[in-house]
Image (cartoon, rainbow, N blue to C red; front, side):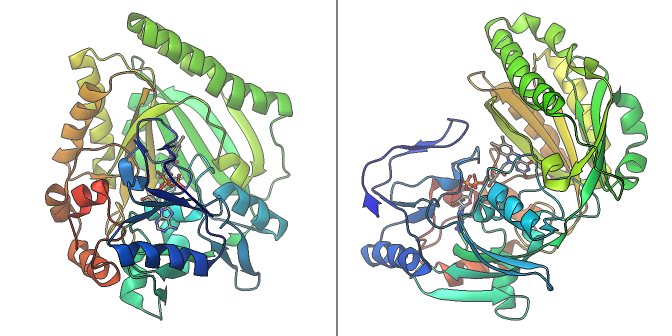
Length: 436
Ligand SMILES: Cc1cc2nc3c(=O)[nH]c(=O)nc-3n(C[C@H](O)[C@H](O)[C@H](O)COP(=O)(O)OP(=O)(O)OC[C@H]3O[C@@H](n4cnc5c(N)ncnc54)[C@H](O)[C@@H]3O)c2cc1C
């Protein structure tokens, strides 16, 4: 299926493009044919996922490949715990399918709207010091290379390609199918409670090491952190009632929060008063299926920057960030999110080679984020921070290369799989450098 001159926009509405052609393949042959067509004409190709990156990672003025007709399960190998899916399958569809087979992904981020390929391409992560990002779950892939040929890779077959292309920012081949390792389905015991942020930072390692999944949100203009501690459990399932889920996830986290953000955008001086209401949610405790706990609905649109810093620098970064917000008198309505991810060996993964603390800052859609994000980035630069590939930042290949020990390894795979830059765009030119 082909169409022309359709405007494409990302979820946050801050990135848009008008591709020369839009394709919706439904098979690997059709996917490869798009790449062959473009490569033959010296044109560029981008496959998009669900458009949940805040950066221009998925933009193209060439051929845009949409995922809508290429998102089915190819195979589930229950005894081996492996699932193979087409690249465009959404994480929410995958979670539902796995649940019917008694399986689950061991960790997830806080939403599940992304496609499998889109999520792993930017090293999408959840929280948990013993768990890597989603790309570390990949066990094999079939990639379409820049000339439209297919490379199959795993730890045993084309191991260099496998190692690097799991986090490829869309530039190290086009993922056709992906095989992921799963675990037996599990439930989580959730405890959410506001605690004093100084106390959380003081005992940070205890919180992080003492739980399967620990994260917290510092609420600007307050001394409070909203903590979330999830542990695997065999206890009887005790989910929140439908009303409580609706109240917490839809009314409070989205509708009331969204209304407060809109009010704050009109009357910024009211923001500190509004954020002081956030910690009053109190303590919440329940037991539910893992994927239902990890991911929630998101209706409030925002812009986001997130950096991966060495785990040991996490507490200091949050302290500096708090001081910076106070010193500059910034008015921030969104809590600052802090999560933890295990080190991995993927060259372009922000947690490559080091245990990581991710610190994320947000700004409500339509509000100016330049000063806040710029000042946060200065703090991150000071500790060798690596940006989330899907979230706003100003780094370039020159500033990033020294921060990634496996940079040259990834570049060698990129030159091999896409020597002419068929999968390049302005974003990859900036952050990975030009090829072709
Ligand atoms: C509300 C919200 C919450 C979020 N929560 C988290 C979170 O908890 N943790 C986290 O780490 N991130 C989070 N993110 C960021 C998000 O997970 C990433 O930006 C992710 O890459 C988006 O996936 P997508 O399917 O929308 O891909 P897109 O944003 O559409 O694309 C991302 C990249 O993947 C590439 N790509 C897509 N398909 C293919 C393919 N078949 N082969 C090769 N490359 C491909 C695209 O070209 C692009 O470079 C969040 C974003 C939003 C908006």
